[in-house]
Length: 203
Image (tube, rainbow, N blue to C red):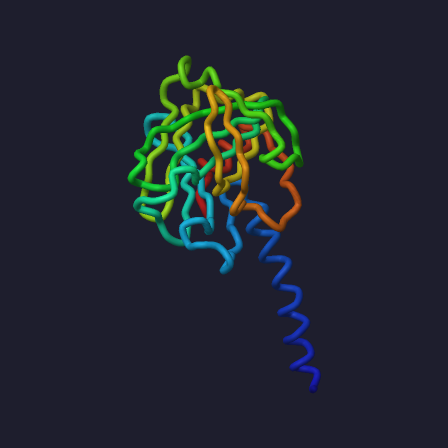
C-alpha cells in the first residue's frame, strides 16, 4: 500500500468520529440508527425540533414506515426531562386517533423507562397547547413555550414502546426503539440554550 492510499485511509478513519460528533453536538436534532431487526413502523429514524409562529415547540419524530391500524398497545413516545420526567404519548396506529396523553414521574437519569412509575400529569387538565398528531411516517408533539422554565435544564428523546394504561398510571412493558439507542446519555442543556439553537439558522 503506497503512502497516498495510507493517507486516504487515515482521513476516512478520522472523518467518521468527527461527523458523529457534529451530529450529536446539534441539540435540535437526534439522528437515529436504523435497526433492520425491527418492523419499519417501530424503527425511529430521526427527531427534529422547531418553533411555530404561535410560540409552540414542535418535536417531529420520523419512523421508517407507518402503521395504519393494528396493535393498540404500541405507542410513539416523547420523553422530556425538564424538572420532572414527562412522557407524551400517541398511539402508533393511525386508526386509534391523535389523542395525546401526558404522564410524569420523578427525574431518574439513566434509568430504563420500564422501571419508572409514570402517573397521569396535571398538564392534561391545567395546560392548554399540548398536542400531538400523526404525520406521514411518524408524529409531531407540540408543547407551548409558556410552559417551559427557561431557567431549568431540558432534555428529550423519542421511543416506540408497548404499554398499557391502568387507572391513572402508564405501565411501559417493552421498549422497541430509542432515538439515542447505543449512545451515552446526552447531558441536558439549559432550556434557553435549546431555544437559541432552534432559532439560529441551520447550517
